[in-house]
Length: 297
Image (tube, rainbow, N blue to C red; front, side, top):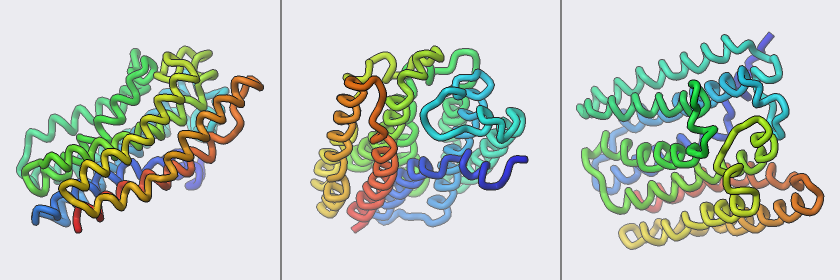
């Protein structure tokens, strides 16, 4: 029998910060120009969280029925371990999508921006087709692009638009930093699973680039948000707070290279990727919150 703890683990709570950070930054951007709205902010947060959970369950289901999660290196999945039936996990994904859709509809009605329904529909399509459908784009190396777009610019600027009805250049810049941290989290997973993904036929970006180049790209991805915060600080000086919070990114970049060197020597990762994943989740959230505070002040 599937327990509540199993369902919670299946929702992957350590990834949910990728939904919180962009809404915080978007809402802070609205506050900075005197247009903050509590109701649309809460609705946007609900949409982002529901979509992230839906995507996680959908990924669990799709990879599970394909058998690509059987020999995974990372945390166990519901379908792959038999803790939940494929139909139950699929239903959980559908329910989460439904919640996201209802909250999204309420947000659109509240803001009057009905064209955002198209954006929402595409976001749901992207969440399902990441590993779902006959030709999942996540198996073709496009996962990082999708994560950047939807957890960066779309989420940040969508939140801002529904409150203020406009966007600003510094909000666009901030959305890039937030999106890059979300990409970095996915890259840790894909670098960790590189060998098993290759055997399963999953052509992720890490598989296509190879371990060495993928780790180099990861280093750039976690360091660029520091530059982004400096750019945003030209409009909002307190945004420099985010550069302080982001300092551990240098450690993540170095640790990733060390893990790669160990992999090359002994033929398997050092285990340091677990520490990087946990630390990156914390820093990614704090970076978004610090950026939000810096923009709002």
